[in-house]
Amino acid sequence: MDFVDAHDIKLFQFGIEGKTESSSTSIPNHTITGALKVLIDVRNHPVLIHCKRGKHRTGCLVGCFRKLQTWCLSSVFEEYQRFAGVKWRATDLRFIETFEVMCLRQCLYSIIYQYQGYGSNKRRLLYQEESIQKPKIKSI
Image 1: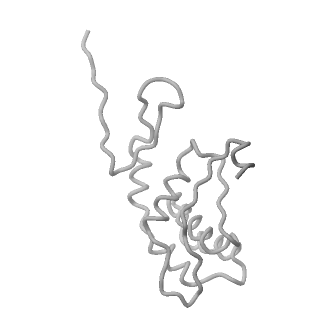
Image 2 (image 1 turned 180 degrees about the vertical axis):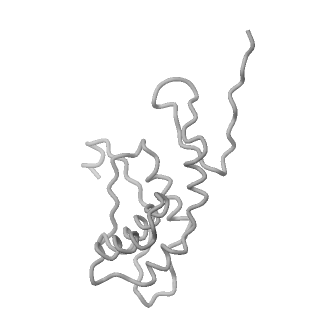
Image 3 (image 1 turned 90 degrees about the horizontal axis):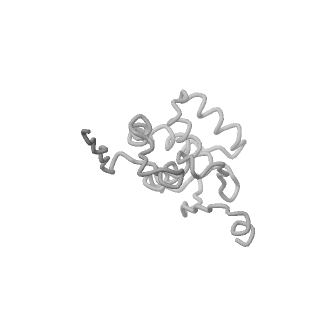
């Protein structure tokens, strides 16, 4: 934490528990959605994504991100399997396949940044569930 603080690094932790292949519990969708919101917000770039081993939870998050980037599913699976190696899990592939990215995709296709004044610290990422206020136009 001293290194993170000394280098002004933003640390986001999402508390996704590690699971075994036989576990029936998968990653909560809202947790992946929250992590994706952080990931697509350019104010957080550059980004390092990691979990304990950098395979399953990281692979699921990156796989969902690739879907958001409109990668074809076979390429998403190929990348996941390449980095997970012999430890890849069919349950992770099912999670990635069934994860719905439409809410986040609509966010990206709509107004991404709303400027409330000048300066980069005034912009923020808007999500579909937030209301967007249109600027008031004054007639002269």
